[in-house]
Amino acid sequence: MAILKCAALTKKYGRAPALEGLDMAVEPGRIVGLLGPNGSGKTTLIKLANGLLRPSSGQILVDGREPGVETKKLISYLPERTCIPGWMSGEGLMGFYADFYADFDRKAASDMLARLDIDPRAKLRHLSKGNREKVQLIMVMARKARLYLLDEPIGGVDPAARDYILGTIISNYNPEAAVVISTHLIADVEKILDDVIFISRGRMLLSASADDVREKHGKSVDEVFREVFKC
Amino acid sequence: MEWRLDGEAPIWAQLVENVKRGIASGLYGPGDRLPTVRDMAVEAGVNPNTVQRALAELEREGLVYSQRTSGRFVTEDASAVAAVRKELAEAKTRAYLEAMADLGYSREEIVSMVDGKSKKEEN
Amino acid sequence: MLGKLLKYELRASSHTMLPLFGLLLLVSGLTNLVMRAANGTNPPVVIQILLTLLTVSFSVGMLAVGLVTVFAMVQRFRNNLLRDEGYIMHTLPVSIHTHIWAKVIVSGLWYTLSAAVFVLAAFLVAADAEFVQDMANVFGELLRSLSFESAEMLAELLGMFILMNIFLSLLIYASLAAGHSLPTRKMLWSILTFLALVFLTSLASRGISSLTVSLVDGITTLIYDGSDAMTAWRAVCAVGAGYLILFSAVYYLITVWFMKHRLNLE
Image 1 (cartoon, rainbow over the protein chains, first blue to last red):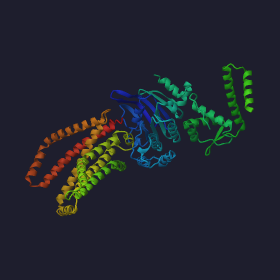
Image 2 (cartoon, rainbow over the protein chains, first blue to last red; image 1 turned 180 degrees about the horizontal axis):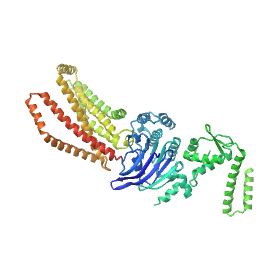
Image 3 (cartoon, chains in turn brown, cyan, red; image 1 turned 90 degrees about the vertical axis):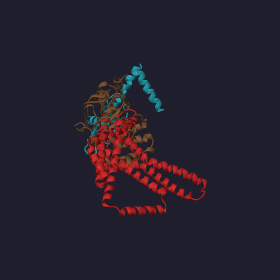
């Protein structure tokens, strides 16, 4: 069964539609790229799946259920912006995640922090911006969730950080879980994707396996994306 | 090993090429155990499912075999390894000849150039 | 989950509240000491200046402690649930109801503590050996004369205090949740919502009391009659509690609705 499923999903802000009649499904074990230019509705879709927004019409189901307390146990979410509380230390933050999520692997998290040489006793507001971003990613990836929703994980980071982030996603791969990565930086992520979904102005343009796209067009997904979204 | 991946061809096919290169060059010797899917995926920076698919293709071609508990190994069949080596060498030669023909070189000029270059390197 | 939320709520808010309380108590203690030092004829100028400074800070501190507590609780609710941290809080496997109750309980605790610190600071300024002796006598007297009825009155006062805390918190939360559902000028809209809610609440309570005018009449007669002061007191408490619970419930529903359906984290 699909872990994430949308049927005729529509979300309007006032009158302007951010998503219009979206139908899609994400299966467990897949790493899916949610690709589209800025403002195409990627973040809206991810917020709907997290229950941070409500659909205007249509349906979004996580593991067959509407977003709520039960589905939040299954989803590990990396928001677009860094928002871990600065007054906590890394140690405190791990305690926080362990308190609220039964699937949080504290040992995995502290190993990942140690590998980055981040002092778990340091207050998070004293870390560099880049390290705060990494700490937040580590908390998200250290959960054994069923669905990871990563909103622009590599937007505005340097190439070394990007490699670290993508490496962390790959090394935490779990065949029972699905990973959705929203981004407009296709070239950087396309090697780690199983499937790609192109969305534009709230509508789906394409949904296929990444290798099928390359095989069919004889081009990289990035080049196909540039053609589809040519200004 | 150094993974060479470009955008155009399907990544699983490029991974097959890369592993074959490793086998032909002796990096992965006959009977050697290959890295796990996860390690290979992290090293090459690609999706683990894609690595899985590439390894399945290599198994189908008889270059790799898997043992249920201990992982995947390079074939011990020396003739299969030799065949891969030859296949890759021929493909490289074909590509070289085509590129030289594009530049307008004749067969004789190419031979003397290769000859001259290899002599220079010997000295 | 409520217990876990309370734990983090307490930790987060104590970072701002404890230093604030500590500072006020320190200033009042120092004022006390300096006042005594200045108590002779012709104290040195330094002491006089110090005393003026401390007296001013003490007065400002006493005036501000309640307001600052309210302000800190507003900031806490807004930063934790309506801005960036909301991305983490609202994706925890915790219902909106639990979130709101955690905030109400911890705010109530800080309001109570700030009232206690206010009284304590006032004592600290005035305290000397004689004063402590006097207070001990007064309290001893009070305890001895404590009847069943005055104990009940104290309990009822405490209950009213708790209900007023809840009422105030939920009034603030409803205003913030509604104001922050809008795309821009969230704080301005929150303040306008607050004023509108206060206005509507006073209109509604007048409307309701005119309906229950006979009840109020009954109470007034009882009070002025003086025949049974305790019954009158109980009736006043019951009516007051009724109002507080009714309006708190309305604010609660407003808060829940906006956070469920109109959450707007930017």
